[in-house]
Length: 287
Picture 1 (cartoon, one colour):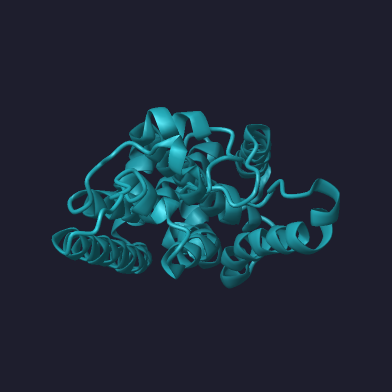
Picture 2 (picture 1 turned 45 degrees about the vertical axis):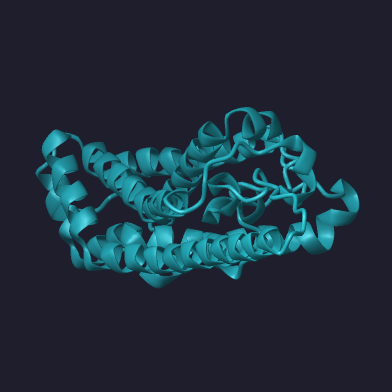
């Protein structure tokens, strides 16, 4: 499978759509960083003037830190909401369309005929799609955090200021307070994995849906449907517990985030995407 995987990875990470999706993510991340850095500098200037005028001020240093102002954990500016709303779409557009397009063009039949096992091509396609989808989401998040950290001191969040963090109903709130950098890494890794699985879902759906645009849109619309169902139907039953990836993939928690719900999502997505790709890839007649 090695040569096939190299070919797929090269195609995935050099495709025009990968760079377009990455650019969109970087633009959103750049705007988010600029807004939060500007807000921090403005507050520091206001504080400096107040102190110079003789007013006693609490600088509240743990309130504004890179751990609270980076895009993955920023509830005050719209770029965070926009990024996580587009996450399934960007992940799918990066390379999720390729299997559907190649299946229609006959390229799949050529590659499968040259493989020792049919499943090798499909597994290589799955891995490349997963990695490309995860990368277009994780790279902007990493660069956004690094940009914010260059300007805002990395004070450790303090539970005394918990009202500013939106973290008290998150199952990893202890990690956020005690090892915030590790919590940032967890958030980025979680987003990478889910973005990769949303992209891989496009490969699985292509076995049943011929239109490549529908293949890309279905995971995106599915996440929106879950969000709508949670907000308008399930809310009266489960209270403020979130089941939507649009909520629990963010670093902060306006609603209760439970670890077992995230784990259940991961299991279901892995079983659906990898299971269908493996089984259908081995049995599907593409020749």
